[in-house]
Amino acid sequence: MSAGVAARPTLGLLAHSGLYGLATDLYEITMAAAYLDAGLDVTVATFEMFVRDLPERRGYLVVAGLEQVVEYLRGLSFDGASIDHLRALPSMADVKPPVWERLRALRFTGDLWAIPEGTVAFANEPLLRVRAPIVEAQLVETFVLSTVNHQTAIATKAARVVEAAAGRGVIEFGARRAHGFDAAVFGARAAVIGGCIGTSNVLAGRAFGLDVYGTAAHSFTMAFTHETDAFAAFHRTFPRSSILLVDTYDTLEGVRRAVSVGPIRGVRLDSGDMLPLSREARRILDGAGQPRAIIVASGDLDEERVADLVAAGAPIDLFGVGTELITSRDAPALGGVYKLVAIDRGGEHRPVRKLSAGKATYPDAKQVLRAVDGDGRFAYDTLALADERVADGGASDVLDGRGEPLLVPVLRGGELVGELPALPAIRAHARAQRESLPLSVRRLRDPERYPVRISARLERLMTTMHPET
Image (cartoon, rainbow, N blue to C red; front, side):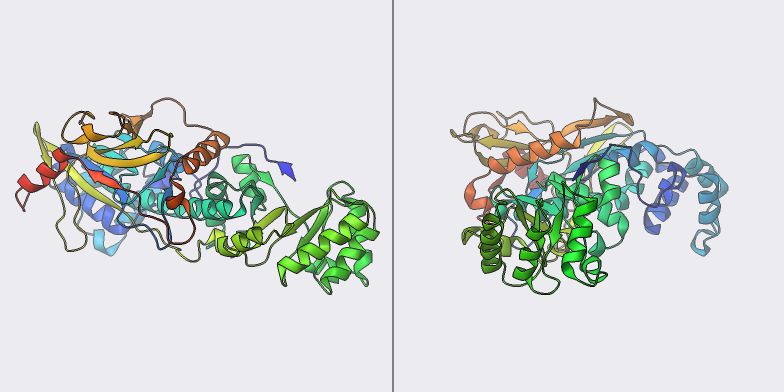
């Protein structure tokens, strides 16, 4: 185990901010060009990102990815080579020169409100809101969705595994199964927000100041003629931190050979029936006078298997969870969307909404107000218009007469409003948030639906809007 040294992370393959403008889908750029050509660049647009429906078996989301969104927005630009690349695309052949000059000068000058990372959220609640000149607000859609969808999915999955572990440590072990190494690095960050104690990913440890954990692979054992020789060699190099992988051949014989080389930090079980194996391993470790040696379990674990092992009293101290966590395999894609909710043009404010079947949206800029009950647990949320006060429009029935607004200002005029919290603070916030949820919402199987109400003012706005507005 070692503590990483924090360093400014980079946004994956984007070596410098001049490439940030290309971190999008082509249709965002075609729309931007058409907006500019139509003279709509003075129009101010408000977009919100939200998730229409929670993934299967999820009672809540753990919001993550805001820090990378902020880095992207503050660095958004097109360098000369990016403009040249776009101009060479066949679909852009008729775009007029003034459009390219406007894109070359583009920077993000808008406002960003967001639910802080680590906060729990629910369906149809805006996780963030962007208000900016329409070209800027439109261009950022793809990156915002990619980043927040991915990290929120992984943070939420991690929270479920940590919930299942019931106080025993969970380590993110999934880099080799992630969908590319960028996903591994930012997935490790999200997993720690969700409650993991660290990661096996060394680069993520360096980038985000995470604790890094690792033992050895089966190949190390097989590289020696005898298993005991492998254990002795590893122990010789790491006398104070040897956690020996014992299941290359015979697991329990491996435990006996592990303790024969001297005092060890612990053993790792990576296959087989974990319950009886962990019990017998504990007996061997204790019998060898090593009661402080820990047992680490890994090998295709998910929250269900972890919960079953904990419920059965398996003497496992740490869980290493890889594939199931880093890919959120049972719900690998979070369906977050980024939708236009209001237009400001020529002094007129115009709420807008989408009416497509199954994809209708709520109009105008919104806020989420969270109520708590007498025990301090979250009771329900109210989806309200952003300028509502809690006593207005039907929100006055919040249990204690108040509702905490969840979206807070992050960028104003493209500049930071205060400092973003450090990762340890985000992780602690996420834990406090989960512990404030009703147990019925937190449970792994068949979670209860958390109530999200709609304010009376928002309901009235929806009923009075003309279908074409």
